[in-house]
Figure 1: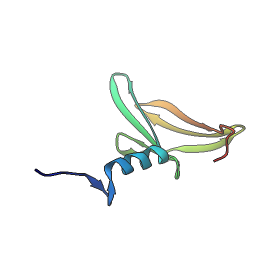
Figure 2 (figure 1 turned 90 degrees about the vertical axis):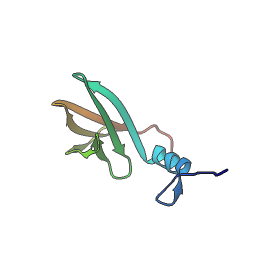
Figure 3 (figure 1 turned 60 degrees about the horizontal axis):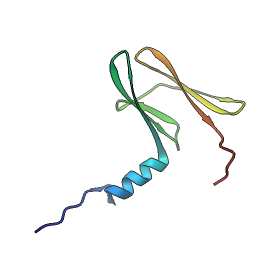
Figure 4 (figure 1 turned 135 degrees about the vertical axis):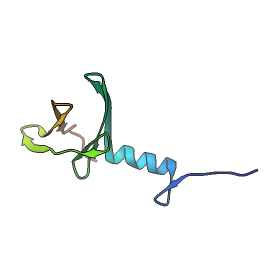
Length: 87
């Protein structure tokens, strides 16, 4: 009998998943019948859509930041606002 495990970059799969959950935010949705997966990398504010790095326009607003980009010809905006809690 064997035991198998999956490591990614030297880290167990579970630790990798836990770390990704802390450093990214992911949305999965459909636009005009097409499936999209948008990932925000919180540390760099990079936005990826279906594995492609997106051209973005980021700006500071009164209550945080807005990052704008296009998905399927539609204008999208990720808004980052402070929760008021310090870590």
